[in-house]
Image (cartoon, rainbow, N blue to C red; front, side, top):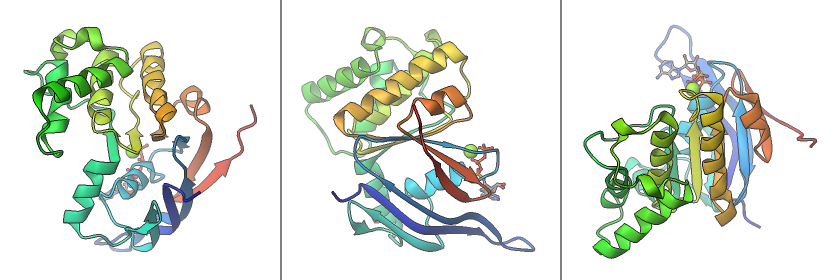
Length: 230
Ligand SMILES: Nc1ncnc2c1ncn2[C@@H]1O[C@H](COP(=O)(O)OP(=O)(O)OP(=O)(O)O)[C@@H](O)[C@H]1O
Ligand SMILES: [Mg+2]
C-alpha cells in the first residue's frame, strides 16, 4: 500500500545567523491512513518545525516529501495552499476561535474559506457532524467565552475535521489544559483515525503519547522511532 506520507532524509537548516543551524537532520518517516503517531522531544528539538514541513507551511532544504506517492518537496506556495486545505487539518495549543461567533459558526468558517460554497443545508449537516464527532453537538449555539478550555479546543478540532482532512496535525493541543480535560481532547483527536485520517500529535505528556499507535522521539532534529510494547 502506498504510504499517505513518506519523508526521506528531510533536512531543514536555519540560515541568516552567524552559523547555519540544522533544525531537522535527515528525518525519514512513513505514515499510513488511520495511524496515530506521537512525536515527543525536549523544547527546541524541532517538533513544531517538523509539523510545519509536514503541513506544507515550510519546505525542506534537502530530502523528499511524497504525499500519496506524489513528490511535493518543492511545491510553489499556491499549490501548497491548495493541498493544505484539501488534505490537512491543524490544531494548536491556542484555540484561535472567533469569539463573536457560535461554535457552529466557527466550524462553518472552515468550509467557507476554502471549499467553495456548499448549499446551506449540507454545510449545516457537515458542521453538526463534526461537532458531534468530538462530543459537543449540544454546544453548537454557544460562544467560546461561555465554554471551558477543553470545550473550546474541541470546537477547534471540529473546525479542523469539517473539511475531512486525510491528516490531522496537532501541536501540543492539550498544553493549556488540565490533565482530565486534556484526556477528553485526546479522545476527540483519536476518534478521527477510525475513518482513516492519520493523526500526528506533538505532546509533552507521556500518558497522551502512550495512547498513540506509534511513538517517535525527536532529539536535536534527529527522529527515531521507539517500539511500543504494550
Ligand atoms: N523562525 C525561526 N527563527 C529562528 N529560530 C527558529 C525559528 N523557528 C525555529 N527556530 C529554532 O529551531 C529550533 C526548533 O524549534 P521548534 O519550534 O521546532 O522546537 P520544538 O521542539 O517545537 O520546541 P517546543 O517544545 O518548545 O515547542 C529551536 O532551536 C528554535 O529556536
Ligand atoms: Mg513547538
